[in-house]
Length: 202
Image (spheres, helix red, strand yellow):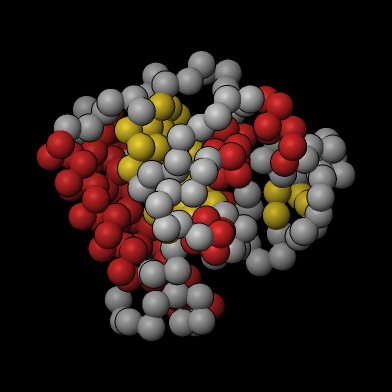
């Protein structure tokens, strides 16, 4: 697995980065002043009509039924601990030149809502993308979730997936991502307080 995984935004308070050039942008800016990227550009880059963004979308066929149950158990446990967040996992096979952050940005904006999913829930989405062809990973967040963890913290979380992935256990890599996310968010809770996370103790 590529440990130099990409994250779409720098999520430290007050700082956002462009999913195209990684340059800083101001909150609520309509385009990047560095490269002029806008959300509409991603629609031109990926003109397909994507399916609803399911909690687990294994388009690459990496997981067995047992794997899916294990991942879903980890996902639901994390959901209970941090109920504001909506955790999504998507595996796919893309050409190596495809930018996963841009693709994920497009998915978050273009995918129809799933069943009773709301706009607020989409804003709190944390999407893990895995390109099965080369092991590249990316985290893409909705705008409400984007400032909770820093870019470096998300990269550290993604790096914990490398060992089980390289051992040929992709489901364990995803479970490790969920566990590491919980650990980092527990620490973030200490920084920002319970306003942004569950009131329950770790």
